Structure formats: C-alpha cells, structure tokens
Image (tube, helix red, strand yellow):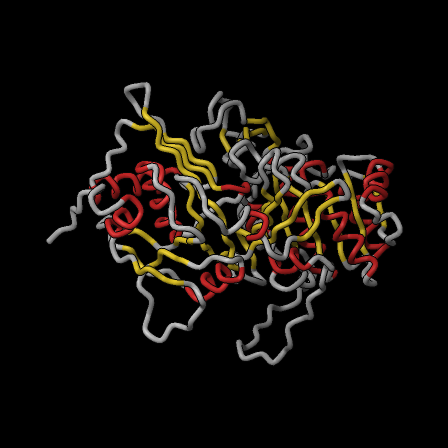
Length: 464
C-alpha cells in the first residue's frame, strides 16, 4: 500500500495526522490541522554511501583548555543581564511576546547600540517595509547607527545576503514570516517555521554570528509554532507586559549560556524602552502605611531583589459559588493558601469572593510569596492593615508551618534601602548579618493571623 503524499500537521503542537479532523487529539486545539506535503524517509537512505568520503568523526577529552569566547555586550544592561552577561558568539536566541509589547522596539534599540559599538549588525524585517523601520529608528533616535536594514521573507535571499555581508549580529523579525522555497507549505506553518529556524541556526553555528529570532505567541502566551524551534535555539526569552501598564519584563525560560531566573525591567515611554535598574521603586508607591488587604512582598528574581505590593480583597459573595480571581500569581497556589487559612486558622472564605492582584503587572512564581499572600488575605478578611513600613516573605506548608526562604539578607537589605523598618519572615539562622530591619519571626501561619487580626480574632488549630 502506497504511503500518502500529504499529511495534516497541527499548527499548535506540531503533531502529524494522516487525515483531517476538526480537533487535534494531541493538544486539544480546534481547527489547527493544515495539509502539508509528506516527505517519507527511505530506510537506509541517510546511511547509504554517496561515492565520496566524508570526514571521520573525531572525539576530544572533557579536560579541554580552550577559553570560552568573549561575550558581546549589547549596550543595554538589562538585556545583557538576562542573556547571562552579553551575547554569546555563534548562538541563536528566540524572543517572543504579545503583539505590541515592544519586541521590535527593544531589538532595534539593541541593534543601534551594537552598531555604535563597532559590531556589524543586519536587521531583516518580514513584517514591515523599510520605510516603517526607518521611521521607528528616527523616533528612537537610532537612525544614525550603521545598521544594515533589509525587508525580505525569502530564506534563500536572506542567507545569500548574510553570507555576502558577514555580520556579527543578525536580527530576523519575525521567523513566522520567513519561507523556504523547498518546503511545500504556506509561510508561518509548522513545516516552514521548523525548516527556516533550522537553516538560520545552522548559519549561526557555521559562521559564528549571533542570530536573534522574533517569534509570535499564541493566546496562551506560548511561542507559536512547533516546540522543536525552542529546542534548536540556545536561549528562549519572553518579553512580558500588561496592557495599560508602562512596565515590561524580559524573562529567560531557557539559556544555555547563563541563568534562567534573571529578569530585566524596562519602562515604555514615547521615545522607546528605558532601563529600570531599581524596579522596586517603580512597583511600590512608598514605604508608608498601606490600607487593609495590601502587603509588600520582598522577593528575589535571580540575583536581583524586587519589592512588590500584593493586593487582596475578600468580599461577601452574592452567589452560591464564590469567585476566585488572580492576576500575576498562580491560582492553584491561592487555593492552597485559602485552604491552609481555613484549616489552620479558622478563617472561613467559603462565603466570600477572593480577588488577588500583583501590582505593577509583574508575575510572581517564587514560593516565598506564600506568606505575603496570606498576610494580604488576613488583612482584608479582618479589615486590619499591616504595620507601617513592613515587608513579608516566607513559604507556607500545608501544615501551616512557615518554611525559610533563601537570600534573606538580600531581601532585608533591599527593604531597608527603600525605607522599610519591619518584616514578617521565617526564623533566621544564627549569625545572620544585621540589616537594620526589625524582624518578627513567624514559624506558623496562625502567628501571622494573630499579629495582624489580633489574638482573639482567630482560632489556633495547630496540632498538639
């Protein structure tokens, strides 16, 4: 029986099916199967001799003495921080984000800074005309930078132009618009994105140039196209930002040449993106007294301490099923904190709608935010504000115990620098350095509830 010459590929997950269906059974998405040409591999074809001798594979020892290649600084310290200290030669970077978040603006600013520093930079756009990019460069005051600009989507022409120019850095905006004439599929499909990304990454490895690809994201916030593209590149960076908020967060989720827990913070203004070396001062209005339902969390993102306000509201529910709404935090973790407060402290949220928000558009994934969220919920429940100039951090276990959080000295030093004088935190180790912040050790969540709502406002349900 002859094999079919066409298959149906899911544009969301890359799964391949022999016939069309309305729903992809692999990822559950609807209307994502697109017909593409199948290219079956003949068994033994790749290993068959071609008549010419190929270079034998050589192995080396792990104890090599070669120095790592020098990083190329971009001129934007926040971008260098996320990349691990600069751009690594012969690397491929994939940057994704929501439409209009500022990906093209950031990369155009970085291209101008690199070009002014002496690097040869090629900027290839497939979404805009050359005149549009030039107009943006004039607005960003980057038109004087010697950046080589081209508007092209044909992969063959792009590679030929790059081989002639021999740039140090290549920016392709975006990978979904590039197409290869040898692939029988429309631009932006899984087959085209996979093939074009593979060729561009191969060019980066062979030429030593740094290739930066811009990728679109889906409605779930994931980079569109097959996941194999994220495996091909050396770093995957997301550019995040809430609509209506001027702050932008640059976050690495994969980095072969640096850490993946660093963030870069920018502020979007009319003249472009401005670096924010001290994001805590932007996410906080001040160190004074806050209303009930607000708690300041002392967090750490990579090597950078970040103070951010967590706001909670526990309002009586008008319906039989209370509502739980979360912005900037994990909804499943909120459900866990509510269960711990009900079981260990006797605070009933079953008849209340609970709303939780992280101010400033920042998304928190650190477990040490548990205690700050609990403090905001208790404060809203009891309508009692936290002490003045107070920060909170610590991980909460299901038993109600408060676990210690790493880098406590860094958190407290940042709090002291911004004018905070009090802290609710897990017990510190002996010999911890003095920071000037008065620390109240919280070993159980009921102690936090008693400190905020009063000794008689809760029921201590700790196990004997």
